[in-house]
Picture 1 (cartoon, rainbow, N blue to C red):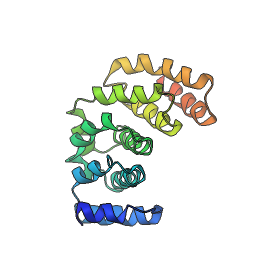
Picture 2 (cartoon, helix red, strand yellow):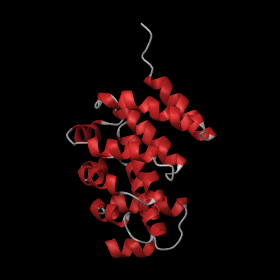
Picture 3 (cartoon, one colour):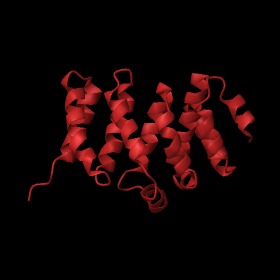
Picture 4 (cartoon, rainbow, N blue to C red):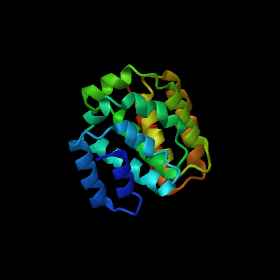
Length: 187
């Protein structure tokens, strides 16, 4: 499938089953993820959202597909402004940085400079216009990165406390869980 063919397939509303089918096809065809990442920046916001949804599903289906394109994904993440795409990018990063994520993705991430991404995740948490789901996924990704960037463990609790002060039930619940993970284990 070409980039133009994919763009045509996702220019109209698609559901979860179509996303799963397309992500399987794209994975099998070894679709160029640079192209899919670029489509997530399409000026048609719903189309870009659907591309980001596909990207997330491809990652969840087979994270190894991302290994060769992880650097490009990381380079582009700070440029994401589409609210729907922010959600998928933050969720992909949350999963990619999890302890249990398998070796190829972890090894590649460990060789990349993630500081601009960490800064962008904090920006998303601070920005009142950013959707709650993005803030939650950003919080989990930051939690996962706290050992790599020690200052994250210092900054994240303050940001979570601020969000939880008048936050929704979703941010309250996620905030409590993340804060619990940040507490040192008793000796």
